[in-house]
Amino acid sequence: MPERYRLQVVEDADKLALAAAQWVVLTVQARLQEVDRFSLVLSGGSTPQALYLLLARYPYANEIDWTRLHIFWGDERCVPPEHSQSNYRMACQALLEHVPLPPEHIHRMRGELPPEEAAQAYAQELAQFFGERQPQFDLVLLGMGADGHTASLFPHSAALKEIHKWVAANFAPSQASWRITLTIPALNAARQVAFLVSGADKASTLQRVLEGPYQPDELPAQFIQPAVWLVDAAAAHLLSR
Image 1: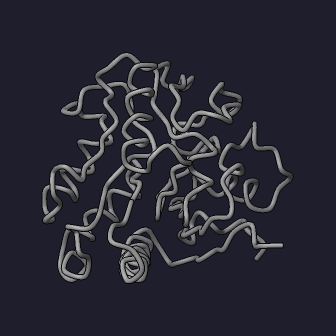
Image 2 (image 1 turned 180 degrees about the vertical axis):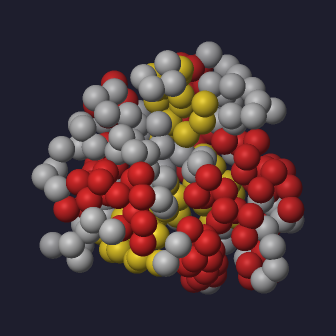
């Protein structure tokens, strides 16, 4: 039986960004020795943002052949791309504007559209890239909220039940707003998934997700497996291993 997860704990948030940058570079390099293009799914949030800032700088930026990367998103708020809350905007400012990535290799979720329309448009984008078969991203980067959500898969939300679609519109109760998100089947089909988790406010949830009973409707991050978990000591301090 394969491992449900692999865990790496580092000292603090800065070390976490550094370890994640090194791991992403090695993962991209290894895969591009086998294929012509690499599909990378980005996440929103402050922890991934620190990673993106590193990937945009020497030496990491020089160790990736950006012309062969295609960039996707795990989720997006239903806002225009220039909005301060846009995951696309954050990724552009932190990373994409600073590396030689062809514009046509950026596959953003169109948060300015009505939610269902945006989800359908992104599903069509995936179908054009992967063909009609199940998408298989090379690497998905995810975060985890203090409530156990990941991407925009919130506890007890409708998208948790989606087993056929690759992309869904989902309501975010805590923000009283709509999101666009990749679904559990799309995320679990990826070649590799990595969670980046930082901060003591995530410690109790992380312990429940990794070591507690399997309650994925309550803790949606449990649905995503196998996965690599890169976490800092503050987030990991309640774990037994």
